Length: 84
Image (cartoon, rainbow, N blue to C red; front, side, top):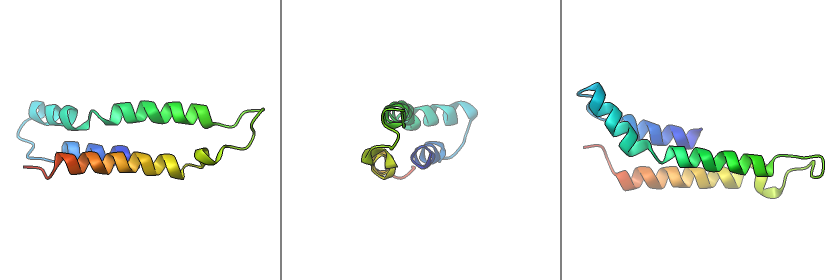
């Protein structure tokens, strides 16, 4: 959620001249959140506890996936650069 918030916050930043232009900026700069969400859903489904594996794997404790999601979000915002 934090990674998506960072991406969406940057995607909505700007001059807000019109609804159409703001929506265009949001889609253009925030599209990466959709594949990140799909990846997060896959990771969550693969690492959830099951009767055969009641304790989650070390990977599933959340720190590593969260760090990866945040790293991607911060790299994306850095690559987009400041709003002009």
